[in-house]
Every structure is written in structure tokens, then in C-alpha cells.
Length: 332
Length: 210
Image 1 (cartoon, rainbow over the protein chains, first blue to last red):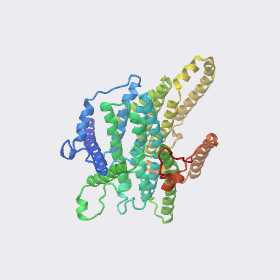
Image 2 (cartoon, rainbow over the protein chains, first blue to last red):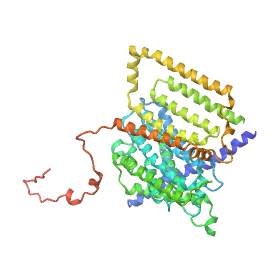
Image 3 (cartoon, rainbow over the protein chains, first blue to last red):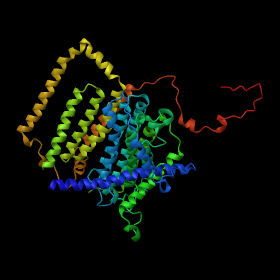
Image 4 (cartoon, one colour):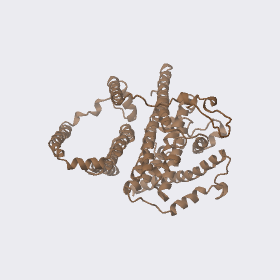
């Protein structure tokens, strides 16, 4: 009975986290299309519901009722597993995101490593989908995306080391709390820029959406998918984008901290601040999609390995030397 | 405690079964996927004994990077064709004694390890180290790694770096006559160099020097 209660409580907490995440993913797709349209002087989706807010729901209904086509030459088990893996990996990482000092599902010691590990696993959904389709375009898309995600993970890892040097802990709440006086975006601004661009590449967003470059590869790794399975890839992708925004706001923008510690601002709960920061970063993501043309593949690789990696490594040395020289290292 | 052992047995059974499936499954890509499942369940076991840093690093390094490259290589090779040719040939049976010898050696090594642990339980004396349970696993690892074992740590880093540079040097070939794109040149192109406006006379055309 006791175990049953514990399990019930945990399931309740998980549902209370995941349902808002899924709903906000649907809303964020609408926001993305809307921002994209406004930059190009269009209206975007504005018909279904007020301001077109229910467009994503209509799309979801359409996907649910469409037939799921499984190619006869595909490797069926892996073909079906791929969208499930993508979706699951995109959702389980939300477990460690702190919405305030106490509102966190799993307050683990190695929270940032967990986030990094799960986001590095995200490549498997894409590789599995691309390979199991047994078709040229998906396979090329999967290979591109594997190379791209592995390359940009390296620089994201080094950027995380930069932040960890200033914090002295791998716990996400500690990272947020150590930004009480100064958000890390100010001393580590170049790292924030590199993190933002690497996050674009890590989530296959334009201008780095080469795995699904429609002019070259039809739809990349998801060419053979239809109906709900395609929608799951889509949901996973957008949940990953939101997660990257959350990671950026925790690492650099002070997470659930309010911008100013003055009376009316401190009343607002931390979750609201975190959501506002995530939305700010997401609107930047959407703007980049609208205004930047797609990179060429060799330029993408060069940017990852020859520009970002040396820059972020140099910055690690600089940060460490600065902290060591001025005796600011967070040793406890 | 019951929940703990349920999780332990679940993960270890998954680990053992997937390790068997790595060798048994006919499709090489499936073996790599089972290998990944094995890595993941072993990192879960690491986390269960409180070595959360090791478990996460295992996930990041092995599953996130090494296994991706494995998968990459295996997918690019036409393994199914090669395997059929190799199994049909006579020379494959010649490797059986060598494989048997190696597997026997590994089997006895495992027995020695387990037996040593059984007959000398204080081999890994936990109280011997400055283990302080008030600090987290990651903190104590860092405290030991960067103080007592700093030279060994740096040395292993150097070995890895040398191995990396060696692999690059071995595979790097300088090829002649390859067209390369200079990014600086591409970015710094002016309009006057690239575009020219010409008045074209009818029936005469223009001659453009290439």
C-alpha cells in the first residue's frame, strides 16, 4: 500500500509536468509559425480559434486520423521505435528542470550532466528512423544529422564546463542560485552566443536544418513517416527546442530567478520567470529561422570544429585563469 | 529495499540479455543497438550504487559519442554481403581455435576476479580512502582526481591526445589538385568583381573571357 501511494504520487507529479510541456509544445509550434510569418509580412495561422491558437490542435487531429504507412522494405521494429525514442528522450529530460527552488521533479546531483547526456542521446531517434526507412533520402539525412549533432555537442559540453567553473556544482538549482548577483550572460556573453548557435545546430533548426533540407533531401530522416509517427518526430523536435531554451535560460539567464530582486518582482513565482525566459529564447530561435539562409554542409562542419571548439576551449582557459588568479574559484 | 532489488534485477537482466544479443543477432546494426541498450542499463546500475557521475559519463561518452560512431561505420559498410561471403569460405573455420583460446583466457580471468573478491572481501577497503559521505560523489571524485592522482590523470589525457593525433596523422593524405574553397575569398568578394553589366547588340552577342 505504501509503495502504491509513492508510485501514485510520482505518477501524479510526472503527469503534472508532462501535460503542460506537451500543451506548450503545441502552442510553441503556433508561435513559431506566427513569428516566422510576421517577419515575412504574412499573417500565418490565424483562422482556427482566437488568433489561430488552436491551429496545432487541428493539425494534431489531422495527424491522428491519417494512415500510418510502414514501408514494406523497412526494418519494421526499428522504424516504429524511432519516433518513440525521439519523443521519450525529449520528454524525460524535463524531469531535472527546476521551476523554482523546490519545484523540481528530480533534484539530482548531476542534473546538468543528465541534461547533456539525454540531449546527446537524441541523435539515436534520427539515426534509427533514417536507417530503418531503407531509403536514400532518409539515410543521407540521418548521416548528416549524426555528424552534425556529435560535432556541436562537443562545443556545448565545453560551454557547460565554462559555467560549471563559475558554479562549482553540477546541480541545476545550485547553478541557478549562484547567479543571484550576476547572470552568467554578462561575464560569459561570447559563450552564450556560441551556446545559442550550437543549440540551433543541435536541434536541427534553420540555418542548420541540413538533415531535413527540403531542397536536397525531401524531408530528410522523416521522409517515409506519416500520420502520428511523423507527428511524434515533430513533437519531439519541438520539445527538444524548448529544452534547449530552458537549458540556455538556466545556464546563462538565471533560471527561475527574477531579473531584479525588488518587492513586486519577487512576488511572481519562479516558474513564470523561467517560462518568460524560455519564451524569449524561443522567439530568438524563431526569428533566426526567418532571417538567416541555410548553411552549406562543409561550412557547418567548419564552424563547429574550427571556430566554436577552439573559441570555447580558449574561453575555458581564460575563465579558469581568471578565477584562479583572483581567488574566486568556488571551492567548498 | 525491495524496490531497490527489483530495479537492480531488472537492469542486470536487461544488461545480460542484451550483451548476449549483441553476439547472437544476425544483423550487425541490431547488435550495435543491443550494445547501446547494454551501455544504458549498465549506466543505470552505476547510478544505483551511487556512482552517478560515472553513470552519466558512461552515457555521454559511450552512448552519446562512441556508439554513434560504431553505428555510423556499421551502417556504411555492406555487412550483410560480406558476412555471407565470409561464412561460406573455408578460412572462417581456421579462426575457431584462436577464438576459443582467447575466450578461455577471458573466462579464467573473470573467475580469478570474482574469486579474489570472494576470498579477500577487504580488497577494496572503502574506509581506507578519505570517503566523506557528506559531499557528493562528484565532489569526492574531483578532490581525489585533481590532488593525489593529478599526474596519472594528466598522463592518461596526454596518451589519449597522442592516440588522437596519431590516428589523424595515419589517415591524413595530402592530395594534389583538389579544388578548395577559401571562405575569406568567398566572403570578401565585391560586386564589381562578380557582376558586369554589358550592352548586348542584337545578333552579335558578347564574348566573356572565362
